[in-house]
Length: 220
Image 1 (spheres, rainbow, N blue to C red):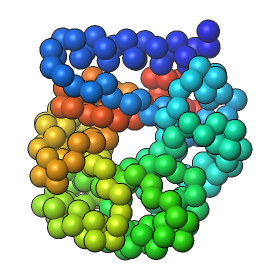
Image 2 (image 1 turned 180 degrees about the vertical axis):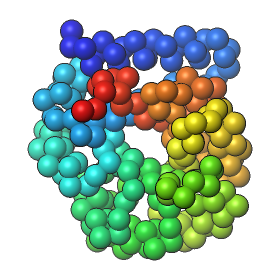
Image 3 (image 1 turned 90 degrees about the vertical axis):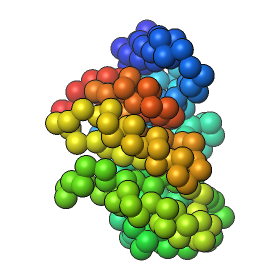
Image 4 (image 1 turned 90 degrees about the horizontal axis):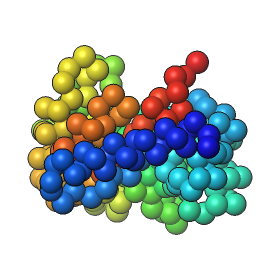
């Protein structure tokens, strides 16, 4: 069995154990295997194993890697987890099933335009910059309800919210806040938790975990 498949199975096992210890009826979260920068040969064992959710940071890289594979395997779901530039939206809506990084009205308008042209509505997460970090994208939490209503008026398929907590802090306080914010817009999907903190994210009802290095190993 390929190492990436072994890694995925051990993560799935850790998630099940965590859910048992929580003793509550949490949904089993989806694991997004963050395949950015890895060549498709490195990802194929996971695809052959039957894993369907993959995360990419860059639109062009995703098109080159995934166009043919998605034609052959229509079960695969591709997630854009990096920042989306407005000039890349027309390409993004053709290949990504999920966009995790909606962070501005300008971007919302552009996605709305392009999805009408392509007759395809990707599932979208609003990214929230909870740590107010200048180097990270995302809206401030105080704007969430207004921004959500703005997106709804554009017929965007908003399914939930996403965050990347500050790396040098305990993630759990941010995850706790995200759970409350998600309820404020009456949504259930939470994209939070990465290789270092995914078990903590599960405690706060994360439904999408973005896991890269724990599956594929360190990036060169």
